[in-house]
Length: 165
Image 1 (cartoon, helix red, strand yellow):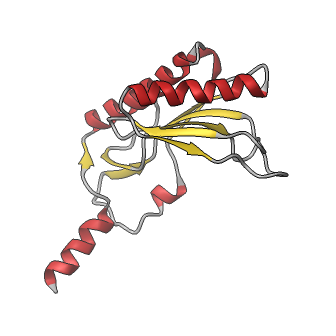
Image 2 (tube, helix red, strand yellow):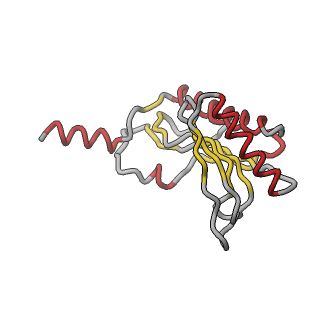
């Protein structure tokens, strides 16, 4: 019984806590993974970067209780690439599917939103790289515009980073 409670407590705690240095490295890897995907589309990442975020309600609201000085963040960077046509967007999805598959990554199709939803009819694609960073090109949930996202996942780390360099 004690082992079961200990296992459940560890599971809710959210896993390993990164040092501040490790977390900064994770931020760098997240940014670079997304920039690499944007470059594969023959675009300049710095010209279409949309936003960098650290917060995610589901990450912050996890059931675990963290020790003093430990925080949870979910770093993600998004880019807003513009495509001349639906055909150009679909070619970009195919390009990323092929490139990621050639790297040995498992690629999954993202179904197109249904009729009447933002981005209706535009399929997407996603993968997770060797560092655990999820990459996707899909219509944005709210605007329906094509969005490329590098999501670093929910991470526990020491310190309270207020700025993403």
